[in-house]
Length: 249
Ligand SMILES: NC(=O)c1ccc[n+]([C@@H]2O[C@H](COP(=O)([O-])OP(=O)(O)OC[C@H]3O[C@@H](n4cnc5c(N)ncnc54)[C@H](OP(=O)(O)O)[C@@H]3O)[C@@H](O)[C@H]2O)c1
Image (tube, rainbow, N blue to C red; front, top):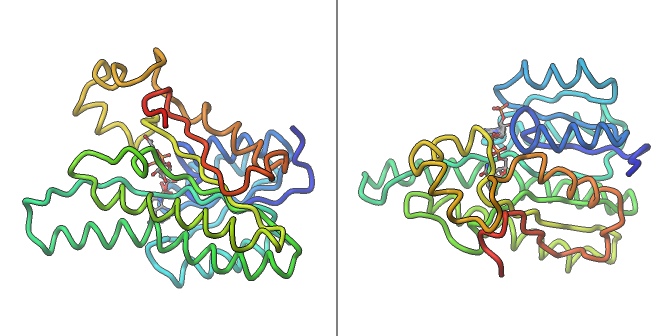
């Protein structure tokens, strides 16, 4: 897969799934905007290794920083062909806590996982329309389809929203040559998943899978490279499940 000439912004590319996606895209010769929030060293290390990487800092819980990220990415990369909306948080919150705590968790989750993606989509559509096309790739979750455990109500709802967002973009803007996809991972071995591994134990998590090993970020990134290549364009609006057979629908 050769993505030479393609410029791609990946949010949350400093760690986990986003980092692996950024590296796979760079290995395929794309120019990549490596977005991060707090993990500057990790993002800088990607830039040190790959000359086609540019780093961008932004806290996606703040809409002014989201707008600035988009503007700087266009300015520094020159143009954008694809936006990979990967950044996300997975914070538990019991319904038995205070309403205030519950609402704080809900709002923060929605701001980072959904609102920032919505705003980048709005800005991206305006830009892609003028450019004559582009792609959105949303990193959703199995949680949107199967549902999550009780402490992740906000997380699952945010990923459901992301899925509907992608489908609506695909239906509404295909005529402008804008394509939109969701990649829906199941449990994937990253820092985000470490708490769950500790809480439920690796054996329990493995028992939910059809395969014998937990999914890694490297199992997800190649599908995103294929989506960026244009070879999947006629699958616009679709969701690719990557969950080791733990939820087949
Ligand atoms: N791991 C799983 O089991 C799993 C399963 C299904 C779906 N997913 C989805 O896959 C995506 C990546 O997950 P992951 O497991 O790779 O997570 P991760 O290892 O925790 O990495 C999260 C990334 O999001 C960024 N981020 C977090 N808060 C941010 C904020 N306020 N502003 C900007 N960036 C922020 C982080 O940036 P900094 O470190 O620079 O702050 C980091 O790069 C998420 O959307 C997640 O919901 C993961």
